[in-house]
Amino acid sequence: MQGITFNDQGIKGIESGAKCMFREPLNELEMRHYNSWLKEDCFSKYQVGEVVYVKEEFYETEKAYWYERDIVKYDIDTLHYSKKAASEMQEHQARFFLKIKSIKVERLQDISEEDCIKEGMYKKECIDWGNRGGEYPPMPTQDYAFTVNGKDGFLNAIDCFKDDIWNKIYGKGAEYLDEDGEVQARDGTLDWDSNPHVFVYELERVDN
Image (cartoon, rainbow, N blue to C red):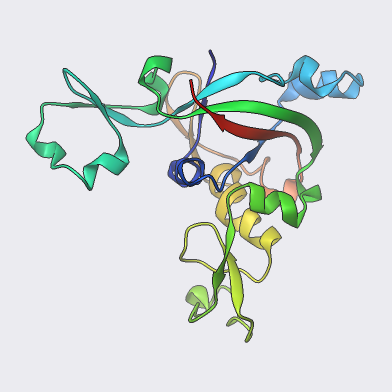
């Protein structure tokens, strides 16, 4: 079974049920296949109907596995544990499993508001969002804003997806692990403004 890694924000969306879709940029080889007009699931990493497990950071003890949510319930510092990176997680250690329901390829900026919601954002009552450090103008007098973390608010779903989901992962300077497990910074070629081709995977949470 293949594993798939999400950041903390994505994990929370999977756990709450808010996130049922994700996007991933095509690499050079996948773009060549796409330009050959092959069906998407002929060359995508995942296949329709495939079940994958979610990789995340976890804590391992002699008798159990612990996750970030457990820290607020238990004093994990009193346990003998070792912290493991998401890349080290195996199938039997996972708590979330996802079934690939559909696959398509599109340009990143073609995302719809409906798909933004599936990516894990939601509407929150607009009480006092402020001006976000001067980066954005104050919110107008509407009764809701789009958010993915419950803190930052956006006028529309597209801006929320762009700034609080996509560019936090693929924007210039965003950190990621390369094939050797080394931390690297992205060069901006996959950011929102670059409008790359992406796989769009629709997900369904299932039991293992």
